[in-house]
Image (tube, rainbow, N blue to C red; front, side, top):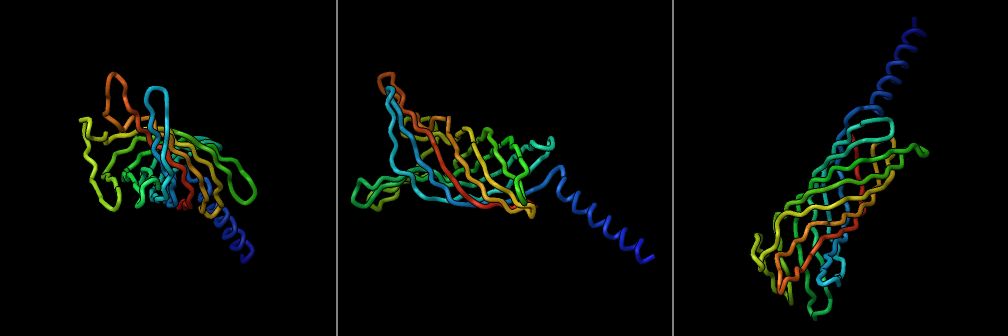
Length: 206
């Protein structure tokens, strides 16, 4: 009887472990450091200032669609913008975005965990924005006027990383903005301003 009970307990434990690893849907959180920048372009020429250091926090859902692939929608709060040290006191542009990414992720067994690689689109909504020049702060105005900035943004995400069996993961990402934030147009030439951001952080899937 003791042997039977022991075998049943062991089988139940293995079943729980298997179900935990093969859950069709899991949820997670993530946070890390971001290095955003803005790219300016007009008349075939482009330039950018210096990347600044900011942060991001967010949550994801991981939906398994096969043994290898999963879909990861999420919601992320991220600070973007740029900076320049050309002025004595420096200058910076800052935007706080609420971002909705949807990534297709490929997962490959590697050692005690999985290596993952993914990409997908994102849409973002600017919650606030400002610029700082020589210690003075100026709030951004959102709208369609030439002195205003577009509130909505969109682009493509790329990510890679490694996830341990306990759910902890290290990830690296790159966001390439495709939307033009600027409304400025002079003599038929549009000034285009686009976001780009490199990030690195930690996550945990429950």
